Image (tube, rainbow over all chains, first blue to last red; front, side, top):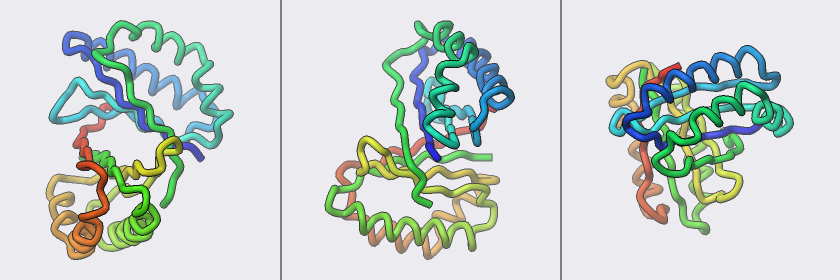
Length: 96
Length: 96
């Protein structure tokens, strides 16, 4: 089991567009990607430019397949210029 | 519904002790705290000194009660000197 916490720092004027695309990605990932246990999008209340994906995958292979999927690659390409700074990705194991 | 992502940066020589105490806190919180939807402890694979609590609460009131509980305050006090730097707490709303 693999947990991903992906913090995306989105330019203020791109937040709405990012939200639309990321919500589509959540929908596609849940519907299409085998081994996806959890895939949720949350927004920081203090700084709405921080959009975080909270993910849980059955295996590294499932995560790799997700990252190679068309829906993932399309959204990554479409949002490539939206970042204020590089995303912070934490790959984690569950302790409890 | 409130999401908390709490990144704790623990001194290398305190990680094992922190894990023991934090696992107890997870157990107590799940068993005792009303309005707790999710309370999980994960550890960064690249940097095991980053221990993150992933939380979901029904309301701000439920979260406040948790933070005022004996089990929470005890673990906070016991781990007060364990931090390498200040914890980063993101309070978030669920988008999807």
